[in-house]
Every structure is written in C-alpha cells, then in structure tokens.
Length: 612
Image (cartoon, rainbow, N blue to C red; front, top):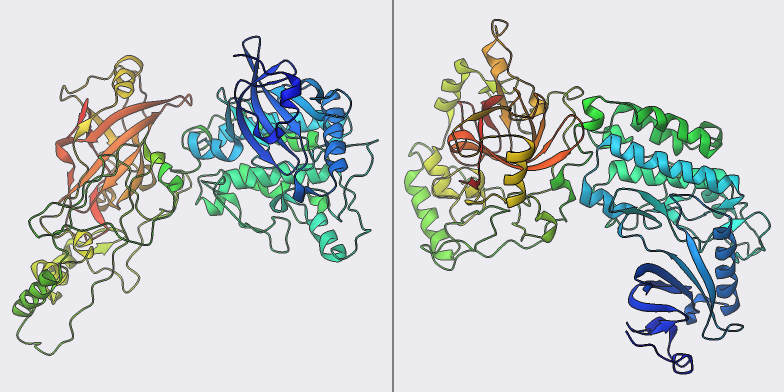
C-alpha cells in the first residue's frame, strides 16, 4: 500500500478515510464503525492488525471541545488498566497536526462478536456463560481496584473473540477518581436498559434539573454487568432486541429459570436475579463478591450445566413475515421450492376455482342428517417464512413460529398440553387410551376426507395431515464436516444399517426398562413439529450414553420424521452429525391428532452420509 502525504490528508474528513491512506504510521484497512464522538478503523502496521479510534466531532454531538476531552479521559483510563479481558491501548497521538489535530487511540483488534452476537451464533450452555461472566467480573474487579468506572457495560461494549475470550471495550464514557466532570445531564452517557434502580430513580426525580448530577458508583457497573447476564440468559437474540424497558424499573422481571422453562439452572437463575435486585443492599457490594459464586458454577459438571444450550437454535430465528409464501399458479404445479434446510410444504391449491370446487365437494360429503348445519371455519395457518442465512448450520430447521424453549430433563414438567377447547377423549396423560379411541371416532361428525375437502386452498390442509402434502424435509447430502466428525471423532459406522438407540425427546423421558415396565402408557409420548433435543439411550462408538442430540421433528405426515444435526458430548464438546430416525421415521400411534403425534419415547436411528 502506498502512503499519502499528511498535507493532503489534512483536507480529508476523518470519518471518510479510505483503505491505503495513513494516520501517522498506521495504514487504513477498513472502517469498522462510527458514533457520535468518533470513528473506528481497522489498521495495519508491520503486518499486524489493530483498531484505531479517531475522536472527531459530529455536528449533533454538542461541544467539540468535550469530544476531545472525552478522548483524553479514555486515554487516561486505559493507561491505568492492564488486564487480559480489557481492551489494550498500544499508542495514542494527534493527527494530522501533533498539537491541534484529532486525538487517536490505537487498540487491540478483537476478531470476534459482540456479546449479543455471541449468544445468537454460538448457542452457549449455562456453564459456558458462567465461565465467560467469571472472566468479566474478574476484569471489572481490576477496573474498580484502579479507580476506573466503565459506566456503559452493554452487550455492544463487550466483545467475545473467536477463541471465546471476553474483552471489555469502549471506554468513551468511562470515568476515574480524579477526572474532571464532563457530564452535562443528570445521568452520564450509558445504556438505559442497564441503569441501576438508583440511577432510574435519580433520573425520575431530577430529569428537569440541569444542575443535578448522579454520583455513579461501582455498584452501578455491577448492576449493568448483571443486566447483561440476565439478557444473555433470557433472550436468544439480544442483538436484535430493541426498545426494552430498563431492568432497574419498578417491576422486577421474571427469572431466567421461568423465562427459559428450566433450561437455565436454578442456581444461575437466582444468581442473575441477585445481581439486578431492586434494593442495593440485596446486590453484591463489590465485583469480587459478585465473582465468587461464578467460581463455584464453573466447577459444576452436571448435565443441566454442560449438556444443553440455553436457547434452542430455532429460537434465534427472526420473526415470521406477515405475508404467506406464494402458492402454485395451477393445481398440477408443485409449490415454490424452499432450500432443503427448511423442508418443503406443498400447497395443493390456491385459485378461487379450487375453493369453489372444495365447497361443492364438501357439501356432497356432509352427512344428510345435518343439511342446515353451519360449515365449520378452518383456522388460518401461520405464514411460511423464507429461509434465512441464520439457518445455514441447521440444514433442516423449519422457520415455524418461535417455539417455547425446552426444559432440562431433570426439571421438566409434563409438557403434553391438551387442546384449549376441551380435553381429548383419546388421550390419557398425553398417551392413547384404547378404550376411548373407538368411542371418540364414532362421535366424529366429519371424516378426514370431509375435513380435507373443506380445507382445500387453505394452509390448514397441511396442519390436518391431508394426503398429498409434503410432510418431510427434502433429501440432501450430509455436510462433509459432519461425515468426518462421525467417522473420526465418534467412530460411528455410516450407511451400514447399524442403529443408534435414541431417546427422541429428553423432556419426555426415557422408555422404562423391563421388568419394571408395568404401565404400557409409559412407553409413549406426544410430539410436535419443531426443534427437539434427544439423547443416546445406549453408548455407540466413542459417544457415551446420554450424549445430547439436537435436531428437528416433522409430525404432519403418517410418520414422525426426525433428524439430528449436532451432538454434545458430556465433556462439553460439540460436533456436527447427520442422524435420522430409521425407516423414514416412526409410525404414529392411535390417538394422534394434528400437531400432537403419539409415538415411542425411544426408537432406532441411523448415521448417514445423505438425508433420505
């Protein structure tokens, strides 16, 4: 890259530097981002990458002298800090003039994610979160021990490197004991979501008093980091969440254990609520006090800490669009194709002519004893969402409405819910009751064929399990990384017919072992479409019994189809896999109904190089 003379750069807007230009000895690679008080570039020097933060005034940022003063205070704070989990300052100076130029700071370049992106992209377990926040509270203890207050610990101001190491960044709002007062409002700059109850109360009482200044304390930083922990534990996509109310408000939020239906262990949930308690005396007084419980959590080996991610992968999907996907233009056309990682739903009719035909057919099929009975109205099915890049690692995840996160096996409560309108006559405790199935069938007014006739030209056709609807994902090759992992790391035999005995859904429990199985109903469970967490019921190869299998179920057709995409070993290591239920899935048992398929708790599965 060729340099550009300082005289020429002096005329360039500091927010619009181009790759190849230089700031002192630092070569611009690309612009990373900008804010009210400055711009950040990726720069290079001697073959190494750094981040260069250039303090420059924007018209709407107020007093330009304050911009420079904030940058100087950031330099003063970073000069006092030397911690592996805090951004490191390598150099600082002024450009293009050494006396009156813009102040710049050269920092570590952190190749990774913001804390919010880390949650969404890596799907951490409770143990991984506890270890990460243990490191963050250790860094916060270091800051406070040197009299430095960060004052804006937010999801965006904490980075996580590709190696999984957290780094606190952006000290633009930071303060230290002997610094001059720069705040020109009752509260210092910061993230409203993470303000402590004391700060919120102060703002409420002094928002119209221009002379009032909140005395920010170390406990405010502790609360802010606790607020980040709460959001990591309760929000599968915290980076995309907008306009959330302050956690330090009047009403305490629900616990992470409750929000995730038990996926966050009780100890970690209680700890997070302790950090954001309404009363200051109920919260840790120092970062060291806040760190101690995390040291204990980091030693936990229990499955609920290391076995399951806090948020199922499908919970990270963006909300569905309001409009449904396009239907075929003619009855004989196939539906618009969706890539294999979503699966295909074929809607068999979409024109008004077919709706008229359906009504005529339904009228001819209705029982003659009730000619004047009003026609039932089909419930509108949810819209079909186009695939998104966020699903790339889950080739068959279906963008259905966001499911409720599943509880851990030990803490799960019976999750088989009966329909909202009335109890099912064909199910007892979520399993078939043979004595009532026949009676329920005799009382049906409409046959399945009649219901399907009424549902032509409606997406409810799919939900009712009508014939001719595509009810399973498309065949496709298993990713090469998964094939390699299954062969080398798990020592599984692929495409050989050798079976894996799996518990289909760990929240339903394992099938009881003989001779203790005295109740046949204990062998069955009710399954729904959507993400599923299974497990190996027996060891296979290098994968021990209890290895967690994450995947997806399709229950619309005559079988319960299942694919598992990821295995999480008891030691916490995760590897990609391609495992599917044998023989194309389990046949449904009596008592199954749309959206509630009855099947065996355990079944055979096979490791494959191609999904069938």
